[in-house]
Image 1 (cartoon, helix red, strand yellow):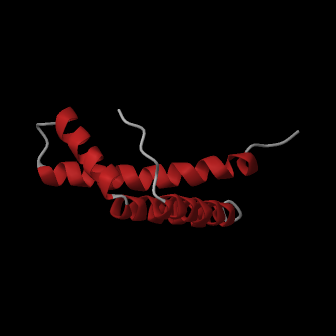
Image 2 (tube, helix red, strand yellow):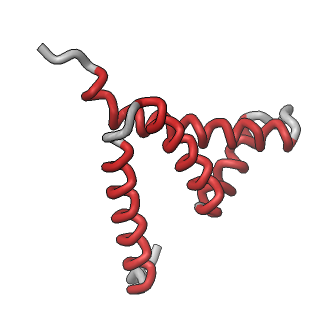
Image 3 (tube, one colour):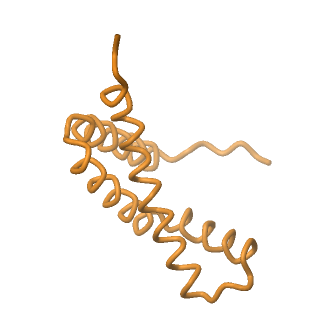
Length: 102
């Protein structure tokens, strides 16, 4: 595989996404747990909509893993997985607050 340089616009876009993610997750970590989980579910849904390449890869993986499911059932599974992933992310950020400290 040839080693191709990443275009400057793509590097900038990645850095901006990273900055937005760090800021949002930093703010979410300070919210009450219920509110942070709601934001996490929203982020999971948004990520599913915005990241076309990852969404298509997930669809292909679900089709390979569960060919007996209908397309609608796989879409529901994909959407629920994205929501739960976002929720789990914010739960992970909130974990230090939830653990009783000595």
